[in-house]
Image (cartoon, rainbow, N blue to C red; front, side):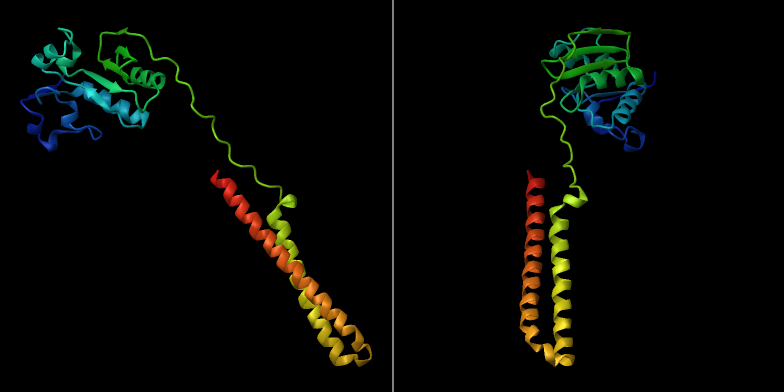
Length: 224
């Protein structure tokens, strides 16, 4: 076991600290600032952090003898050796945390559901306290909104109607110009074509309105 003692965590040279997700202040004694660096224990703590992929909130790590007495710790507590860590469960599932901690090599486990933390240490293998109760899922997993069938899409229907009507209006206008220029005998039909052109324009505007409404309605549903 490789250990290094410092009178205060501020005395730790930055070049010697090799656990990227933790700082000397987090591992030092909460009461005195003293720090005992237990490298095998910190290696396992870093391995646990890497395996879980979430921050570990360290409530207690190394304890100096005087601070351990002050908080009523066990006389042979692994905290005195820098080989124990109390980790908050606020951002972890206790079951998954315990499984991962065992996989990386922690052997001692203490469960404190009322205080919302789990104690882990390097052993010997043992455990105490009652495990955390199963956590209820507060909300059912949301399912993404089902996409409209293309043939039933209001957006497609509105856009299609607008497109067809626009083309129809343009076609009527072309026909109207051709008849005016070439067939003077049927000039009486031109006013009817003009009326038909406006009908197509009205349909096109209606289709555009339906498309805009459908888009807005879909957006509102997505905000719910």
